[in-house]
Image (cartoon, rainbow, N blue to C red):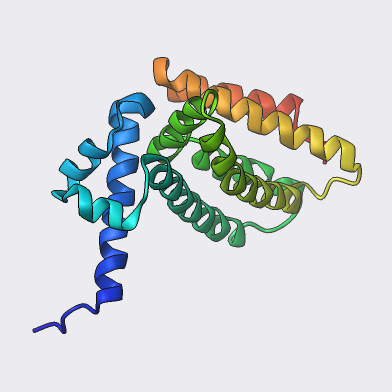
Length: 195
């Protein structure tokens, strides 16, 4: 019989369940449709239990994005560790960054970005994890490009992020792998830093 969980382990497990439920609700119902009641219902938890862990909906949602950012960063770093540095690695790096900017975690973050447009507190809370993720993405990009011109590298990186965010949003209405591969190939051929 497994040993029973300590109180800290139980709290951590409950917190993780709430974070996962919040992300699921953001993806399924959007920011406006994500309510603490829906999150509670998803994990069969009372309002008191939820408020024991998170004082407000905003606190819960921001903690969920930190949680997702941590997971995305770990996956990115694992992928980056497998890539040999140099400009030949750029397609692999673009693929890794593209993965970080797609799927349910990205959609959940996008919902919070939209909510943050009119909610200054949410916007302020989102900035630290987004900056942390941005720095990690830039480090991975620079490892692959070894660009001598810092200004060109910055513009290439920024254009890549803007491009991939737009592509991820486009995929909501146009989920077409061939289209995606074609436009990523075009970026690599025409916009990527020179080797």
